[in-house]
Image (tube, rainbow over all chains, first blue to last red; front, side, top):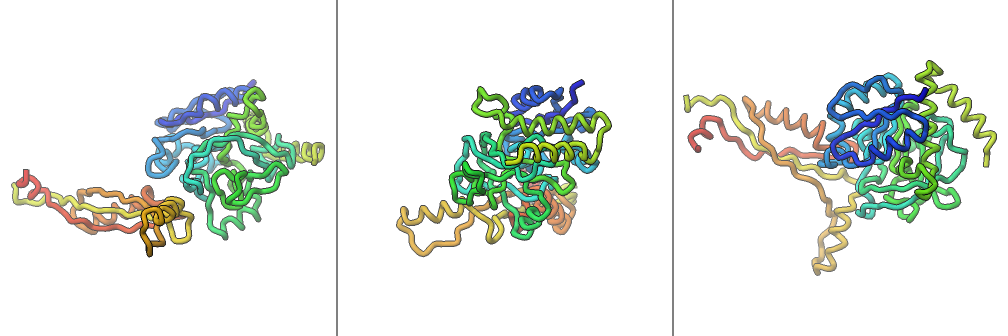
Length: 259
Length: 100
């Protein structure tokens, strides 16, 4: 039986249909969650898709934060529920304080829409346990406000605590400097995605759902989405709520596919 | 009736700016355009946002309290921005009726 994964639809979301499609491919039964409803319908994970929620007025993601569905998502996350924010969804989670840091206007001031290379810094999480360690993933970015910012002390703490989940890298897998072309928005320390301390909420600027079929140029995004769907299924079946099962499997995979 | 002041409408502006030291690519872009304009001696340009609003409240302190809360919760992200509240004056309900 496939696991139900919610996809939040805000006014201005525009990646919701792609996300539903890609989650289906990853084995989930996607459920659309309307922004005015505070009920998540018993889903085993929630994805906040890309787009321009509430027109991105004021600051990207900030008005979405006060919607009924986000109050429900905040409670769900506090109870340990799995939440993944993609692009605008990441901005919403950062504005809501569910993830550390902020996404500033791109250093170039340009909207950037192209494929980038990223590397998962951890492959033992509910969002990355399917990703082979050290593998360079290709997926598109499409955003105007993706420059990851946090103060130096917070950045140091994120690195120390393993909360940097993805980094922009060059073809050889080395992190890109803030002015390098491989870093599409000038993110500090090349951060493309982060995870919360509890390990159940994550966000990234690149779009895994747009890299979900080799016909589209890459299916690397499926590694992320399959990780999430499998972790959600494990929880729905009463498996380890702490993700130990997933983590144990990830360890095995990492050993088996080490660089 | 008209003479009685039921509530007063207070006008405010909230000026939001990127915090000191935060990357401000808009400010930088403006600065970089200065040579094209032939203007010299201008620097430290920062681009922010000004929000004007009106609050109906019994007194100025209550009105400012609401604006503070709005600025803190919504208009400004304290991680990256700072704000300053500017009072722009007040009009009482009774006088507004007289004014049409």
